Length: 362
Image (cartoon, one colour):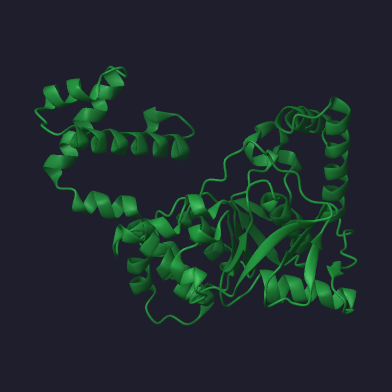
């Protein structure tokens, strides 16, 4: 492993986890050892530990939890736990074992890995792991996996920041409705998962909480200092979560944006039954089905011209107030100015993402 990358990883861990240099060094060395084993095909899972009064074959336990509990082909699975109960640790723990047991998989998640947040440690990336911070990235990467004869495994942390029960009033063109459409058809995309992490059962949208389109809702609990996960469907077994996990940034953001009009994309997919044909349709029409493209079509030319003018005013004078913009543009409502400023910010972020901050290319 490159010494510079390992040194950078140690520095990142020391600052991010707020541990001593010695502890950070040990954590980095443990991760490098795991990474080396995975890359060389020498890593293996001996079995999962379950807590119950009934015995279960350890290798059968691995298959049961991975395939029948967590990574379902038919429906999403929800994991819920209060803040600080170790949801992200559980997800990274699970991803490591899934990567070892399923080498034909591509692992898509919004968990902030150090190799994603620091360019210096990119050489230490876990093979076949991909960062997704939006619905469009999830669909695009999943389609590419299918076309490459691989299987996409999806985990989304902090899902309540993207879709929660409080968002249901948004209407048929809302992110809430789009995600609901996705959960109805995801089984046609050859996707395993997604596993969705929520803090509170009340934040889980009702159509998922009532298990209309969710296979199970698993709960994390702590007993005697040990962490377990279970549901009514897994009884009498609860899975004990211990051992190695993948290193992640505690201070990184687990963003996930619902930015695709799934209702429209579903129409494009039509009655396509073959997963590869479905993947091709997704890649062909995904950009046209983004909420940004949809909003731009709805926005008439006069409004778009006004918004672009406001963007120019902000670039010329970043300190300009909403009232000053309203006066310059002859706008009576400050809410309209606020909408325009939000649109400008969105365009700026998109340019940074697409061109690495070089806005001259736009």
